[in-house]
Image 1 (tube, rainbow over the protein chains, first blue to last red):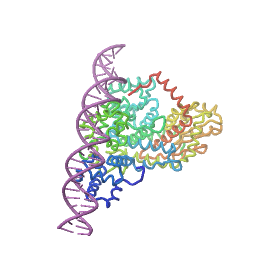
Image 2 (image 1 turned 135 degrees about the vertical axis):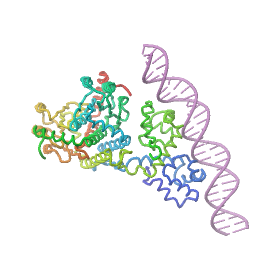
Image 3 (image 1 turned 90 degrees about the vertical axis):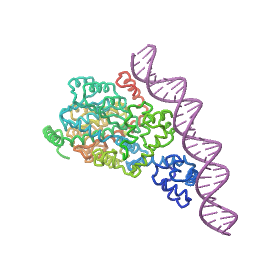
Image 4 (image 1 turned 60 degrees about the vertical axis):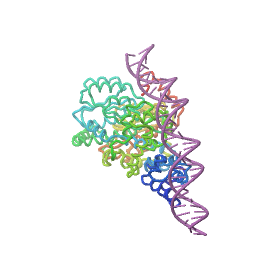
Length: 290
Length: 290
DNA sequence: ATATGTCTGAATGAAATTTTACAGTATTTT
DNA sequence: AAAATACTGTAAAATTTCATTCAGACATAT
């Protein structure tokens, strides 16, 4: 609420003494299952509390509201505010920067995206997707578009370490039909497609589907048309205060998938990682320390 | 989830495919701050979602409710049922998954990383970096390594739209010395280097520095040795419950930089974006709608 | 015990809300 | 490319909802 930090429940509690008998009875009924009961119609609330309708109208006015609708609006606002987690309320992330600084505005939006996106994910679907990705009997193809190919490649780079038979297809090139030649029914496609959905990607998904391959789709909240062909679809919120969309939430999800898949075949992953280390040591690509 | 396992939000999510464009738009608006927005009047909800009132009435019927009041009652019942466990504690991000599920553990860690990383950023440094990146009198070179090249390319793809004279160098190839031939003292390098710091990248940084170029470094909390040559250094926390490190915080920072730089030269950015759109339209790479 | 002040609840009228019907427009299919 | 289908918004009707008035009941004080 704009005026004060007091919740409506507090205001009722505080004024409990100044209320009459029927009003107190009503107040307790409201607090009984707060705030749900206050969001229904006046008459239902009155009946639930065993008081008359005018009593309700009078009390909310006594609490300082213009009328019952005003009271309800306030309740809804409060609920909306509570929906934002205590962490989201923490609206300065970069200390020393004003809360209106782009650092804080942007971070705020991304945290918001994360919360919304995660809430919509079915854990069962997530687990199923990870099981598919970890199944080494199935070959894995990872597909990205103009912007999303960076995300696709990120997933590819890690999956390559975890397991064998992983390939990376960039839908913006015209070489991708080659990859589809030998696709089998057990194969799995991970497809990335977000706003400015790409026709190439859609065509690719259609053809993969025809061959009987499984499709896991990473898209935005509006869902790429590819989702018609997808077995599993993860949609993330991508809106931020910018001319472009944010891939941060998508990346978070990708990394979580990587962590989960790595656990499935941990033994073989460990083995592959060690062999990779050896090879890196020989190439001197990386520094030993510091 | 006590009575019938699926909440109204789930029902909306599930039927998203059977909904029309305006209805989907409305559905997202409802889920935006659920359930508060659904508890107001039909007309307000319609206005918030930018659809007409009848669209709202039609959709709730499509969802299986007798009418809007019926829908609201169901929402209130759900809220009442949830009563005991409101969204006070949000340590579970993916509702429906146990708090020990990798989805929640991972997200928790990333949020933690974001908080720690952002707190360490000097807003003045951030602004200075953005000013350098937005200065079209300076040529811009973006450098990534084995894993980080995906982040580098993400930044490159967007910078390319915002401004001219941007080049992308992959330090793992051996072609990068060519890029250094014509480097001038005003040039700016953005270098990505995280754990398993790469010797190639260090060498590149050293040579760029010798030529007098400015260096902006994105690294992890332990700081790449490149930071000795860097004018500005952003270090982010990257630890997550996984065998690998997380790039999510780095990406968040990159996207924030993009948003800030885009604002600096907004006019020219807009112009370049429009011209790009035209070219996309001609190539038919993207679908017009849906 | 009676009178006064206050509170409560039923009924009414007014206002707002939801619903239905319809027509225009966009989209898809043939 | 044309026809058919389906979707969306405007406008008006029907229903519900809320505020108010007024008569009666309860408690309290004299």
